[in-house]
Length: 95
Image (cartoon, rainbow, N blue to C red; front, side):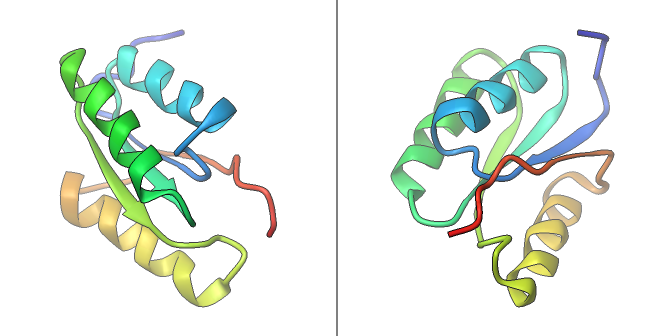
């Protein structure tokens, strides 16, 4: 993976499985990561803790991409926390 220093990524459905792996890989490449979750705050917090323990930057943000009204809040959280958004990985499945 290329150097992602200075980039900000939102990964939906990142509290477990493939989404968590994507979030960790992006962080390892230097991106600050918004770990999005719809139902598992504990899982998202664990992913964030693992990213931070490895020296990365991450924050957990709740919101379901299956609900159009919640999507702007996810993006706004990325911009508030890290000042921008460069990468969006839509990994969440529709519930």
